[in-house]
Length: 489
Ligand code: H79
Image 1 (cartoon, rainbow, N blue to C red):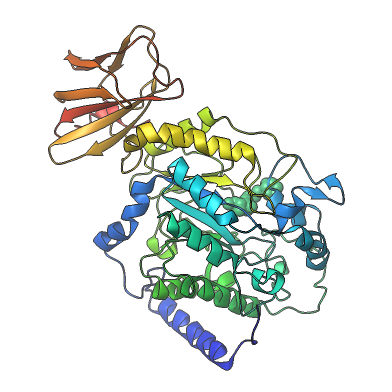
Image 2 (tube, rainbow, N blue to C red; image 1 turned 90 degrees about the vertical axis):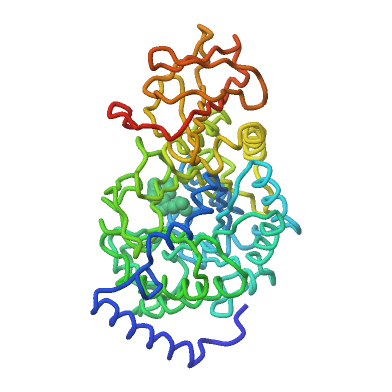
C-alpha cells in the first residue's frame, strides 16, 4: 500500500548508486555485488545448502491465476504459459486488471498448504513469484499501488514466507524485471522482450525508463529488507538487445540485494551475454561457463541438459503440465514417474530440479499437482539419501538408469537408480575397480554384490521393488577412479 511517494532520500541514493556503478565499470571490478571479488571458498560456502538441496518447488501465482487461461469466456490457449495471458490477448494493463483483479481472492491460510506440500514432497526450498511480467506485486509495497497491500489489504509475501519458514524451508523470490503494468516501462527499447502493447505508441506519451528502473530497485529493496532472510532471488528475464546495466542497472541492483542479504543466491537472468552463461535468446543454449558477477547459477527452462556442467551450478525449472500459471484448459500432466525420473536424471548430472505448481486464485493447488508432489514425496521418503546431498555420477551413465554419488574420505557410495530392473536377476556396473564394502536396497531388502573381472555384479530379487526407480546403495572403498572411458556421456 502506497503511504508516500518516492522520498528525496530514495532519489539521492539512486543517483549515488549510478555514480558508484559507473565507477565500478570504469575500474573493471565487480562481483555481482559485493564490491570485492568473492573467493572460491566463500562462494562454495554460500552455495552449499543449494547444492545439497537438489529439489525445490516453484510457484507461479498472480492475477493471471484467476483468469485461469480464459479471456472473455474463451480459452486463450490450451497449452503454454498462461501467466502470459495478458500478452497473448494483447490487453493493456487497465483492461487486464479490470478482468483479473476481482477474481484474485486468496483464501486464509493458503500458504500453509503450499508449505506442507513442498515439505511432504521432499523439497528443501520454495521459489515463488513476488511479481510476474503482469507487474502485480504480492507484497505490501510503499512505492506502487498495483500490489496486494493496496488491492487486498494483505501482504501475501509475508504470509507465504511465514508459512515456508514454519516448515523449515528455504525461501526464494522470483521477481520479473519485465513489467507490463508500469507506465514508465519503455517497452520500445527492446525488440526481443515481450509487451502487450509492442509496436504501439506509448498511451501516456514519452516514457522515462529510468523511473521504472528506480521503482524496480525500490520494490526489490522492500523485498530483501522486510521479510527476514531471503535465500534465493530468481530474476526473469533479459534479452540480447536489452539486458544488464543498460536495461535494469543490474550490477547495482545485485549489489543492493547483497548488501542486505550477503548469503543470497541469485540466478543469471539480469543479463543475456556469454559472460553470464548465455548462448542465445533460447532457454536451452548455454556456453558452459559462468562469471559469478552475473549470477550464481544458470537456468535451463523446461529441459534437462544432456550432460552435467562441471564447475557450473545449474537448475532446471519445469512445469508439471505445460503452463506455469494456473490454466483450467491445460490437461497435459506429466506422470509422477516422469517427474521422479527427471529429478533423478538431474541429480545424476549435478543439477537442481525446480518443479512448478500453479495454484488457483484462492491459493489452492490443483489436485493433479498435489497428487504428483505426494507421489514424489512417497518415493523420497524411501530414497531421500540418494538425492539430497549427493553429487553428479562419477561414472558413465548405465543403460539401466542413473547414478548419484556420495563421497567421504574413506569410501564412496554410489546410488544405483534402476529404472529398468534386470530380468536376468543380475545388474552389472562396469568401470569401477574399487573394492566392494556393502550393497543394500533402500527401503530394505538383501542384495549380494561381487566384483568379477573388474565388473560389479549385483544379484537382485526378481521383481523391481519400485517400478519407477529402485535404488541400490553400493558402498566402495576409497574414491572412484575416473577411467577415461567413464566420462559421463
Ligand atoms: O515464469 C516462467 C515464464 O513465464 C518465463 N520464465 C518462466 C520461469 C518465461 N519467459 N519467457 N519464457 C518463459 C520463454 C518464452 C516462452 C514463450 Fe510462450 C513460448 C513465449 C511464447 C511462447 C509460454 C507460452 C509463454 C507464453 C506462451
